[in-house]
Amino acid sequence: MISDAIIKKKGANMLSENLLQKLNTQVNIEFFSSNFYLQLSAWCDHQGLSGSAKFLKAHANEEMEHMHKIFDYIQDTGALPLLGAIEKPEMNVATLKDVFEQTYKHEKFITSCINELVDITLQEKDYSTFNFLQWYVAEQHEEEKLFKSILDKIDIIGLDGRGLFMVDREIGNLAMMHQN
Image 1: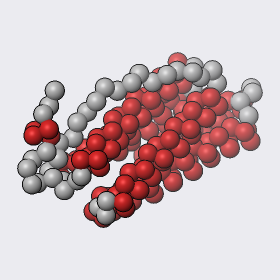
Image 2: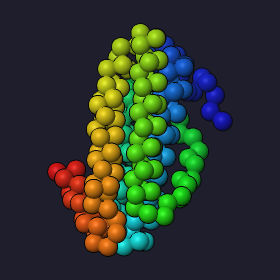
Image 3: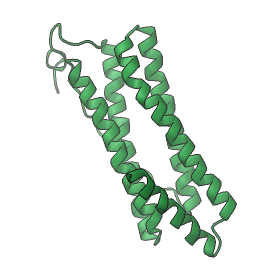
């Protein structure tokens, strides 16, 4: 176990203990998110849904980048980022719609976590961290919009017959658009 003296350099840490703890929790949530998307990518690949698998794998990498940004920010403040145990992602999916309903629900959860962090920064008048978190606020807006649009496509096109092929192809195209 790492002692509190090692976690925080004396006088150098710009973060409150409360905010540091919450940011470290968010690091681990982002790490879990990466594993969550990677696991769903594997499920899609196993089902022959290569477009969705590619999209979700790219999203897993993006979530890891999100984790690294917070990790680096914590270090930049003079504090020590701490990685915790990462839960195994649950696999409760039977259809592609299930996959994207879970991802949409997960993104809404992430948004609530980011909003809680922002609220803490305002309560503590930590405007530097507030400013840092604005990127995540905007990102979460885009994430929710993206996953809702995928669910809308699934509802419009359907997953019967050729619909599944068309939806998977559309999702694969989204992966290529996000790489550019």
